[in-house]
Every structure is written in C-alpha cells, then in structure tokens.
Length: 184
Image 1: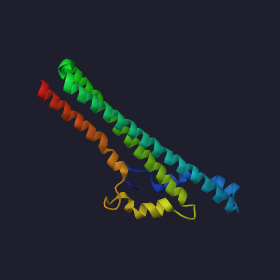
Image 2: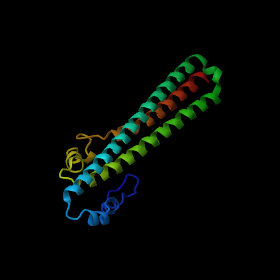
Image 3: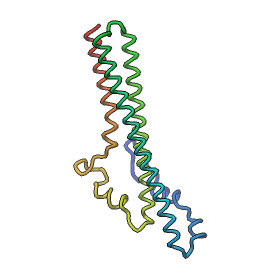
Image 4: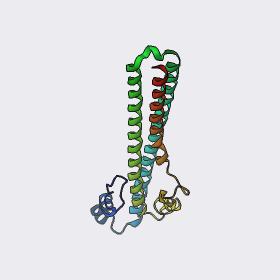
C-alpha cells in the first residue's frame, strides 16, 4: 500500500481493482469474444482518459482565475498603499488582508483537491491499461519519469502549483506588515 503524506493510506490496489472491474458482466456476456471485450475496454479507457484530461483543464482554468485575481489584488493594494492608506484605516487593511489570505487558502485547497482527484483518476487509468496491449502511462511514462520521486528526472507540476498560493499569502502578509510599519 502507498502511504499519503499525511499518514493516510490509499486503499490496497486489489481493492481498487475489484471496484473497477465488473467480473460478473465479463464472465457472463463476453465469454469467448475477446475482441468485443477488448474494444469495450478500449472505448471506456478513451472516455476515462478524456475525463481525466478535462479535470486537468479545469485545474488550469482555476489557476488562471486565481492568478488573475491575485494580480488584481496586488494592483489594488499598490494603489491603496500609495494613495489612500491613511484613509482606509487599520480595520480596513486587516479586512483586506483577511480576504486576501482567505482566497489564498481557498486556492490552495482547490489545487490540492484537483491534485488528489487527478492522482486517483490516473491510478485508475493505469489499472485500465492492465487489460490493454500497451501501458503507456502506467508502466512506461510514469516509470520513465521515476514515478515523480526524483525532482532531477521529473518534478510534478502539482507540487509546484501548491506553493504559489502560499507565496501570495506570504507576500500579502509581509506587504501589509510593511504598510502598517510605514503608515501607522
């Protein structure tokens, strides 16, 4: 069993396999017709890979949204800090910081959720590939990339993108502390 970072364990691979395959349907409706069965598995594989790709696209759109939002917040903060900080007051600055940090926390949580969802989907893609003639993801690509364990071979983007909301949160905190120090 593979352990997650927080000490939780992914279900055993055999449990996931049992949940994936409908062995009663396989044995009763496709006995002796391997070509038809293989075509069905391949079609389901194509659909599932497309679903996994759509999750990745939504993840990218989410990151674009939050990067745009943070650019807007930084711009707004810069304008306010330059021209109107004294008029906003301490409570206003604390409120702005709270909103900025809350959206950073939401962004971090969403990115983490997408990473977990994609991990599960690509794990299932690998199990589907066990019944196909080739296993480009499960056996070949992921092995060629050192399973993401050595950053010199491959550093998964999901590891990098989780740091971006934390970077923004730190930048907001430092920026607001500097504004308090200068204007208060």
